[in-house]
Image: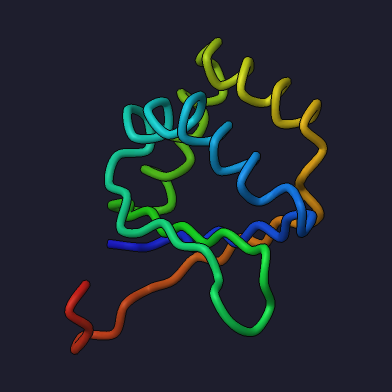
Length: 106
């Protein structure tokens, strides 16, 4: 099992707008195609206006196949257009994490 942690830095005044757009247009699509959502978070202290979400995959190949299917979904294309129009995203970071043998997520 591997985990992808995606961190989005958003314009400070756009966090609530982006979360509303994501919840209404992207969440169901991602859950359908990507599978297991481990967690979805916003930052409270430190660097604010960030969204962090973590997804579980069987392997890098599983991740690639799932993201390819999602990219072909017209609902994802609609979210992408609306996301660009909202113009809230400043930066995206993606990390692939492999749990240690003693991790509760191993």
